[in-house]
Structure formats: C-alpha cells, structure tokens
Amino acid sequence: MKRFTMNQLQEFFHDKAIESVLDIGTGTGDFVMVLDNVFQGRAHITGIDPGEQWLNEARERFHQPHIEFRRMEGEKLAFDDQSFDAVSMSKALHHLDDITATMNEIRRVLKPGGWLIIDEVSADELNEAQENHKMLHHVKSFVDRANGISHQETWSKAEIRDILTRQGVEIKLSFPHELMENTIIDETILNEKYRMMEQHLEVLNGKPGYHQIAGQLPLFKERLKKHGFKMATMLMVVGQFR
Ligand SMILES: C[S@@+](CC[C@H](N)C(=O)[O-])C[C@H]1O[C@@H](n2cnc3c(N)ncnc32)[C@H](O)[C@@H]1O
Image (tube, protein in one colour):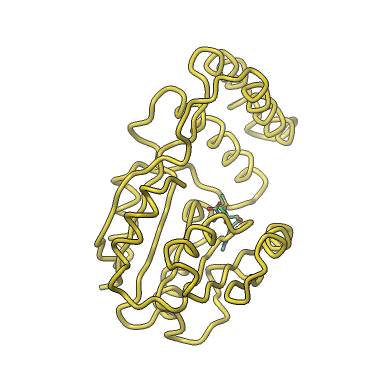
C-alpha cells in the first residue's frame, strides 16, 4: 500500500486512542501490516479468518507479541462485547456469507464510539488494464459461487458506501487509492494472469455455468495483450456506527 494512503489513515487517527484492533478476513495478514504501521506498533492487533492455511502463513510472517491470529468467521465472533477500539476488513466485505450478521457482530464487539475501517476493491472508474483485473476477479467469484463458496462480484464506490450506510455506519473518511503503481506489461506475468483464468475455468468445466463464462478466456487473452493488467482501485472507508 502506498505511503500516501497510510499517511491519510495515520493523520485521521493521530488524535484517537486506538489500543486494540480486530482485522476480519485477515488472510495472510497484508492489512495487519498496514494497521501496525498506521498505529505505529502501539495497538494490539487480532487477525481472524476461517482459512487455517492463510492463518498459518500469517503466523509465520508476524512474530510480534502484540499481533495474534485466530480461526473465526466474521458472522460469529468469539469476543466479549465492547472489546475493540477499531475493527477492520480489507478486500473481505464481498467475501462475507452474511454482511448484516457480520456488521451486527462488529457493532457488538466495538467499544462505544469505536471505529470501522473498510478497504474494498471497487468496480467503477477503472482503466482498461484494471478492467482486466475485474474480469479475472469476477470469473473467480463466479466459479466460487458455483462451488458454494460465498464470493460476490465487486461493487462501485457508491455501492460500497451505500452498503455501509444502510448497515448503520456513519462515514467520516473515504478515499480511493491504488495498490499497484504501474500497469503490468511483462509478457511472462500477463501469461500467468491468463493461466489463472484458465485454471479457474478448469475447476468449472463440466459443471453448470461453464459455457456461460468460458467465452471470456479468448477475450481476456486479447485484452491482456492490448491493455496489460493492473489491480482495480480500492476504496478506503472509515466510520462509526450511528
Ligand atoms: C481477498 S482475501 C483478503 C485478505 C486480506 N484481508 C488482504 O487485504 O489481503 C479475503 C479473505 O476473507 C476471508 N473470508 C471469507 N469469508 C469470511 C468470513 N465469513 N469471515 C471472515 N473472513 C472471511 C477469506 O478466507 C480470505 O482470507
């Protein structure tokens, strides 16, 4: 994540006492790294995820005593009421089985006046290289859903804000930011992206829905060659429950 993004978060939180943070859908802990920088190693961070394989990787990355990882789903948090000063979710909102149940849990475990930090992949105002990321991501989400795994397509920035507002979040800060500075034009890496879509589709081969999206593969190849590949713009949202 770019320093500018971290600076904006740091600036926002500089006069707020944040001692405990819960990161939901932490994966291998990429966002824990950001949080630890933003709160300058002074907050206890707990990362949770249902995927034990991701958590094992995360545990190998972080050895600081103020960072811990636990296996858990956002919809059922094994924490007491009012346990955290802030709860975060990065690239995880569109993976949740039940957004309302998770938001209710977040509201319960947050201290009064506690902060919600949501970083989410956005679907609008993307350039052609970023549209390629969206295309690959949406094929993956289609395949996941076909296999019974919760994974929505990404939303526009207005939709993300709207989802959070309807869940009772009062947005205090929101800004788009980029995770990738440059467009990938290296042929080897572009071939890897193509291979990724091929692998996603292989999982679906012979199952309902395959023919619906199989046609995307040649189009994706053509688009990668023409435009390259870049991660979609992210939307950072910080708010409090009303
Ligand atoms: C795209 S990864 C994001 C990982 C990390 N937060 C990051 O920013 O790189 C989405 C994560 O959400 C997790 N996830 C899926 N369903 C979840 C749920 N119901 N509760 C909590 N996490 C969930 C997945 O296991 C996965 O690790």
